[in-house]
Length: 259
Image 1 (cartoon, rainbow, N blue to C red):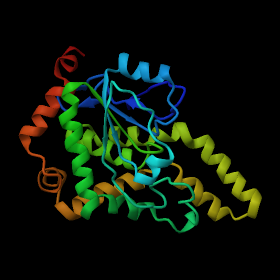
Image 2: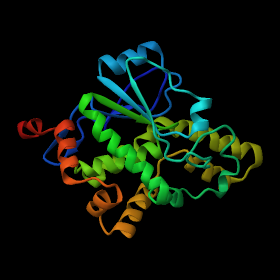
Image 3: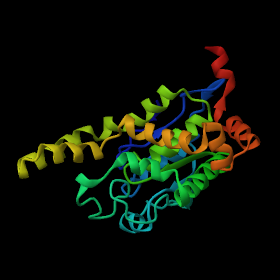
């Protein structure tokens, strides 16, 4: 899995460097994934720029989310807005009050929905943008929690780089190390308030990364496109030349040979 970056103002930002890719290892300071950036301190920003060579930030959140919690601005960075969902979507987006009635949310279906229709077009824009801007330095894409939208984008990028499926899932599930305690507290708050164990369990699960969620996303890919290669080529509109250039920019082929 990637390396979690210790920052004061964000809990779930990590560098995907050192993950084993096809014929090499992902370089440090190239692909960063994260949660909301509205509470970053000046020191946090300096760490990201100076230690991780951050150049570009891609915001996957809805317009309302960005209005409620705008990113900390730094003139040295290029900010790009590509919302995956630009509407209130309980279970995925995190506008104030959006997650009321969480017991009715089906995360498996939501993960499938992200990879269909206009949402797939947005996913394609994000993937292509990451592949383009990473040549100039590190790119950090993020949503509000760094779990769902960010998790799906990361899984696709890693798969394009030939990362093993188990490693993709391991990286996806790492978010639970950050949010498990909070999810547990929410579970007991619900239990103490109304005693409904099923609702408490479902709400807790919505706050955590679940293997069946990301498997549902890849299941949607296989069902609709036949296989991942066809999805990348025809679903995302990414050709071999773009992939090869991306791999050259982010994979260290020599390091793998030395191990």
